Structures are given as C-alpha cells and as structure tokens.
Image (cartoon, rainbow, N blue to C red):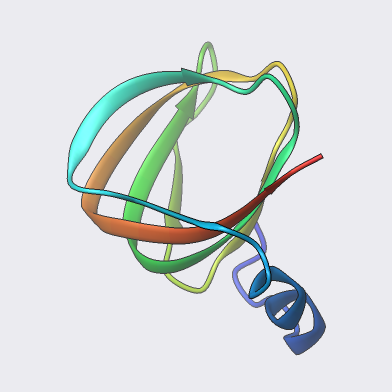
Length: 84
C-alpha cells in the first residue's frame, strides 16, 4: 500500500474504470493482479492467513494474483482499478 502516490500514478489511474461498494463484508480471490487507486472510503483487507491491512482514500495498492482475502468495507468505497 502506497499512502502517498505521486502525481504520475494518480494521473495514470484516472483513465481506469471505477468500482464502488457500500459497507459490507465479503470474501474475494484475485484471478489476476489488480492495481487500484482509492478515491473515497475505507476498507480493511485481510489476506487468508495474514494480517489485516487498512486501505483508505488516497491509497494506491496492488493485490497480487492468487491472493484470497476478506474485504470489510467500513465506509462507502470508490476506486479506480486495473487488472494485469
């Protein structure tokens, strides 16, 4: 998680699609690597067998291919995302 992404990363992410979600809790497995820039909200992502990571508005994050985790959305979240 990059809590202070530079302007070049933010600019690149603006061309990506957006996804949003109301507060909820759900399991997720990444079938490919996802890079995201969080625009609004706050979520805790807990990798299976790992430690929870809090992600919030302004963060730039990469989720590796094959990672299984639980998303707990605390505040409505909106993000730009890109699969690679």
